[in-house]
Image 1 (cartoon, rainbow, N blue to C red):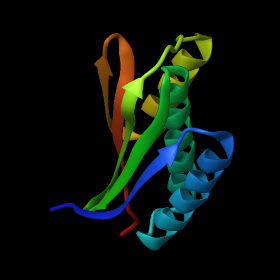
Image 2: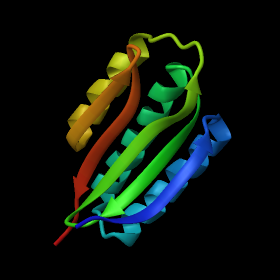
Image 3: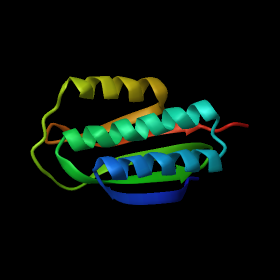
Length: 123
């Protein structure tokens, strides 16, 4: 069973993304992720937010749930404006898939709208 630890609705701006990255690091420490997994999780959250920003979203919801693993969901919030995919999107997708487990991406109207992934915890 997964218990939601933290849920944030955030504007997709650089300052707010930095704050979310810092909160992610603290949360990873709280649930006993290894240092390396915590760093990887921060990268995945940041890249997910950037994908949504480039896809035309102005805000997002980031949710963390705790169970046997740390589950993270990053979803575009509200209406999607004009966005254009770019080469950086492919790099972001490759990074997320390489660093996290159980990666699931949902698309709406051709753009990525939600990314979920997990990280295992130390024994």
